[in-house]
Image (spheres, rainbow over the protein chains, first blue to last red):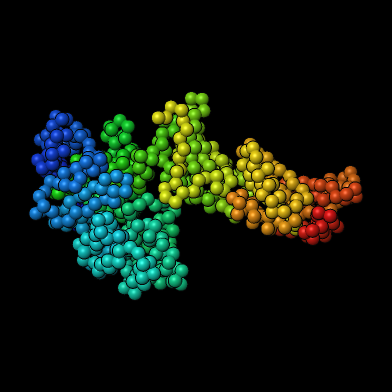
Length: 435
Length: 140
């Protein structure tokens, strides 16, 4: 089932031609209306007319989040106030907030992008979608809301919070699709179970559309199992639009990018060279239809790869793989790129190991040495040395096969690993050559 | 079965001293302590009065500690006391994961064994071994 079949299943050649045409328009919009792009293009000696093929995009300069902070609030708007229908802003907890403007057309396109994901989970105008993302400057709530309205669903705008009421609405109003963050989906599921329900069998809900924060496969499986639903991963970022840039169909294996609206490249974050499809690197997005806040080659810092194999669902738009982490988190160990999220994923597969962990990087001769400190759960029998050694061996083997890097496991006493209320310090880099 | 207090420690200077100090300050009296050490961690096995309370105390203090049921057999304090017990286990197909012994006065010794499976204690008792069941008895 498709929302816009003519676009979503468009023959690839036609889609590339559409992308090129729209990319030129988007470049002109950026070049003519946003000072930053005009200066950058001029510096690089390129103009929108130099874009003869999609590959030519590699000749154009990148832009980054700091550019948007510097331009706060409206410095990168390509439209006057009269044409701006709404603004959204990032939280700004890590610096100056970034403000993104949307014209009425931008909002319509956004709704279409998200509505395609509703179709991917089998939704249509008969569906009821409960939006438990926060509403406000954050793009989650209103983005999912727009998708539900575009599809013609019944939208329940519960926003986040008051979890028992969320469960009650979900049951009484017969919610088919829940849209929220993965951690909130799990809390809603657990709350329903605590309230004495079995949502998997007693509630009509058939899908969740979750995004805005990282979730391990185990967590996704847990949500799917507890609610008895299809899990749809949604990708988006407020700088580019919001949720709906890419969404996961029932075939899984990645998220279909709305390629008629966004052009994705993967670059090596060190050399900035464009990498071929299939290789992991930093996702760079160029908006093709955004009127108010066009972005050319925006470096997302998200690490993924492009999956270009045809999908059995019939959609021709390429996928991005599930995010591996952020370039800021990437460790280069003996020349191999490793993300703490990969290590965390392996740890979650071992019920004997507690979720606290710490990675210590040191230099041993010419090589990097990686030590992973973990704790056993209290239930794990600690009296037999063999069982502890066996656990270490299995964890080391699993990490080696996942990361392609040898990791020494050290099982430590509880509280050796520092607890913190906020973001835990997971990596301690003591390598000599590191700056 | 009798209760063994088991403590997991990092193999670092001062860790055993700190654990023993924690028990001492709570007035826990140990009657035996053995340490299995590896390159980076050690497993301490202790008999003491009030093992459950001691384990809870250590956990609260940030240690990984537990009470583990183990089998204790009283054997004569003479050559072959342990050998006969282990030969029986071997012939009966019982796998001994770990063990240790201590003498009780001049006449008797207690052999402590961790054996796989649930019925080991019954089988030893049925074969005539003097299985220690009373938790206080081992300290005698």
